[in-house]
Length: 441
Image 1 (cartoon, helix red, strand yellow):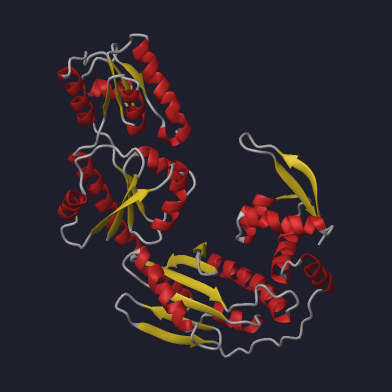
Image 2 (image 1 turned 180 degrees about the horizontal axis):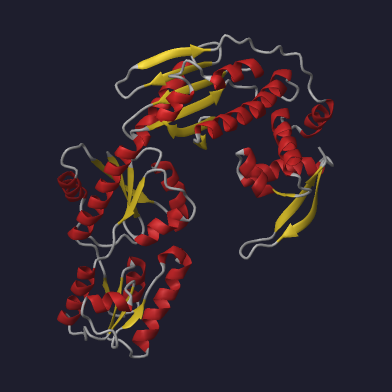
């Protein structure tokens, strides 16, 4: 199992925890399996965290965040696809900070404390009436909220409500110390890491039991000429893609499977392997394969992967799919954990003839704007199937698998040529107003 321990490069908290020490803790918990821990530092600020995390979870079985703020910053924008955990500040570390303050001559019973609630202090048998407390809801806590914590401590000290400050944020500690305000950092002790490693271990064991019965299908398509403007093959490819996606979604409903877009221009399907084998009669009757071959002009490649974990099943599904791509016709392959590849499975159906012409209107728009027909057909399909008169560029970008910036460039080209216009604005609670766009395709 591979775990990434994620920390911020800037304002990194002081810690006695080292990479070797963390590895010893991990290996003492995962006694019967190999475990590798990698330290990952996020350069820049908290806005960069979601992008880093989205990439890391493609590679690692688990992500361990150095604190709750880092964890929730990622969770607001990224859906976990592996085990996520964070290291907490235990009550013992607060007690230690209070002792350090008392040792240095400050009143340890009258402090300004963040990240702990009144209930938690009562559990530690501490007097809640004398301390100034700021309990933090990390689920709704942003990088900009740090300034509120800073003002809370500074005001308490300047108005004499506390003798010193105790914080869980290294950035706050740095700012207060620069102003000469006595401050102590609530750190993380070895017990915190032991506890979180045990949580990761039990989640990992549960996932092995859960996903041992899961099969993953990886589906991709033969490549079309994406940047061609007048290609008939491209037009067929786009129509094929729309038909293929419809067939895949229908098949996923039959399997009661979860379906997600994949990074290789295709889809993942996650389903119960017993149900898959039952519906396909041990792959003797693969209806999806027959429908692809019968209704599509281009090839579709399917890989089915088995494994003892979801990551292994996904990896094996991609390996099987890549093996299927070596064949000139629509093909299915199966890959097992013991490196046994089974297949090829191919349909006896014949592919339809390529006798369709390119839509002359889209052809003319493509020539005038320089936008590929593939993208125009995709947009036209989204517009017609939505029953809406106006659209946001951000929503269209999500549907087309593009960034909002790329979609804005496409919209600008269509507007300059008279095929799109702005008909209004939508103002969200935060951020700039977004243009409502109407198309003439």
